[in-house]
Image 1 (cartoon, rainbow over the protein chains, first blue to last red):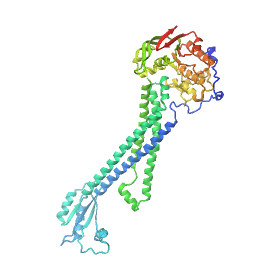
Image 2: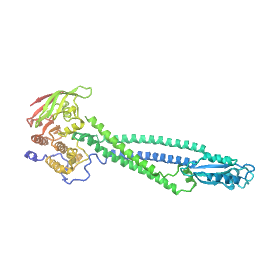
Image 3: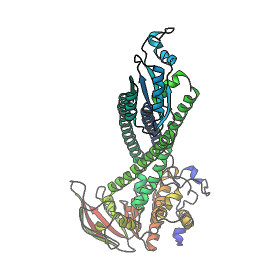
Image 4: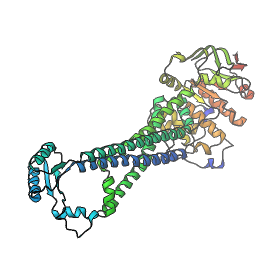
Length: 325
Length: 219
């Protein structure tokens, strides 16, 4: 290019006035083939953040409900009750003591707590009022038997030993309650999972369409790269990297917001610990602490949404390239 | 370099817009592609830069039957072709320098290896002081020169230009023509699609004239 004709630079008289301004220093951050910041990109981040937040809330709620349902069952299953009805001619206090001894001797029993006469009377206070003498009433006595964690004591043998040795004794293993609890817990978890599937499907669809919309603005870039000789994989990689970052950005904003919300709810639970309201709530829902499993699931959700965003951009690039030729 | 044999092109189920085109573009040659509006100049250029597939006939580019090549192989062939689009197709979000360097970036070259080359070319086309400006603030003529610089930066063997002087005044048009002539002298085959008779009269070059989808060649 040393020819004299070429050394005379073309001059454009139509150039705007600003063109006269020398501009020789290379500015920083001017190299991204895919625009780093655009209106469509910001809108996509907002959509992803909102959908991730909603999906993470649903996911966290399902994790809490599952843990609470499991806790209800195990709480009830960890206790059995021995009931001793008064039988004429027998000393009920002696029978209570004997039944407690039999239960204590059973392998897998963590503790035995017989209710005293006064405690049994207190159980009836809501119905009979206070100040009554219950000595003449045939009030049954209760013994709560606490079962050790992970132990499976032979409750059938305990029931048999009690009925054989103590007339009027019976064992309630709460089987009916446990079955109902289990059914209720399963239903609650199934409903939660159903909702989670719906929210995840809505999230995936929203993210897919929003990514497709953001990609539409980039068709010109795909075409230019194609015509200057970029291979399809190179073009796809440029967009995939960019949209993976957008997906992660939106996902982290929404996911972390949901995590903070759960952490705050757990903190409020701790503040109100011991109050009647807190006890009711924790009896129903357990604690609001998600635990590592819940937080891990939200992190997985963020990764999934980022992957969906990147994957959609890749598919869109190949579809656009297919339409060029 | 380029060989068309009985090439026909139709869009969808419509009539053939190009019929029985048979011609060659030889190495180091210079030709104008001309004809009235709607004659099929842009369609023929799109066939040449592999943006369209013919409905019939054979197109050979650099000795390869383009119908049989994979997308990656076609991309490799495109790197040997420089294209100046009528609407420039510069990327508005990056600087003129980055636009011109794009063909080298997609080759995987490090910026340090081509920086001087790109700057020299930008000075050569008169954009030395505008290299960090973005296309939206460039004038029509500056965009035109940026588009030409991008088309030639990777030293293509074939240069295709669609109405490259359509947006500039006659003085600048002549200068741009000189630029194409110099490229041709340095070994690049040049095909310029234009309907600017005055521009074609400036140079005694081969003319490929399209009329109603058929080609007439004036050597």
